[in-house]
Amino acid sequence: MDYVALPKIELHAHLTGSISRKALHEVWLRKKKNGETDLEDPLVIMPEGKHDYNLETTYIYGLLTDEESVRYTATSVLTDFLNDGVCYLELRTTPRGTPLLTAEAYVSVLLSTIATFELENPQLHTRLILSVDRRHTPTMAASTLALALAHSHEGVVGLDLCGDPTAKPGGAVAAFTPVFLEAKKKGLGITVHFAEAEASGSKEELDVLLGWQPDRLGHVIWEDEASKEEIARRELCLELCLSCNVQAGMVRGGFEGHHFGAWKDIQGPKISLGTDDVGVFGSPLSNEYRLVAEHFGFDREAICGLARQGIEGIFGGEIEKDRLQSIMWE
Ligand SMILES: [Zn+2]
Image (cartoon, rainbow, N blue to C red; front, side):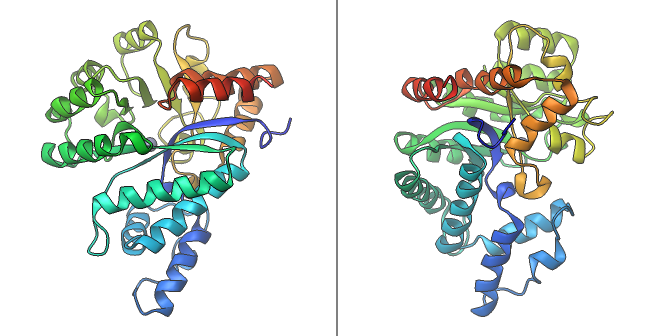
């Protein structure tokens, strides 16, 4: 089966983590030539296959500081997803200002890059989700929400909770409750990183998160039985990221031990495979489908059925769902 040709929906991809090492290298080359960076060549410091969260953060923050680098890397990410056969993409990002680019300008640059790309490549439709980082203050979260609402008519479709699972433990994420309830009220889609690690899998936290009435949940690894039942009862869409979880050691037992195997047989929830950080883990979405076929014995029909499960979970609206229905049932 040709997994690249299979039309696919990607709902869990972090923009900066999706930038290829090569694209980062090219931004670095330009900055080096102009005397704008002291960093070493990212291809040498972070060769493909080597993961180091702190290094990656240093490079992203050190290189994506101006409009040109944001446009260049975002276009490269969109090109990579398009070439992998993705027809609908929701990219998430935490708006962050730099001395050369305010958070507001960052979001505007991304939206205009997406619009330009879509004119030339109408087969891929891309929407933006803004992320609240767990380390943020409620005030920062409120300004992320304000940005999302200000740009909701231009392609920002949702709000996400992401970041270090050890920050705000034991239900302290409740500090963000007013922001997420307001986002929901204003019609934004809600997705959260849910029970991603043991530290963020407490019953207190999961009750807070489920209280936000999220539409989708990312990862869903450490939840208790009661939360599992509630997720099934609500028929939520689950964004499951196999290679990321296996490579980062977030699950035991390799691919066969991944909780995709348990969720696939539970009635109610819809599963959407995601790459999380394809620039880091190096496994494009087509390969995630190949891995499911290989490790869970999915045949062609089952793979096509799985790819379609994400349609109902998208934040892009009914017209977009109709477009995807027609493409994915061809
Ligand atoms: Zn994620």
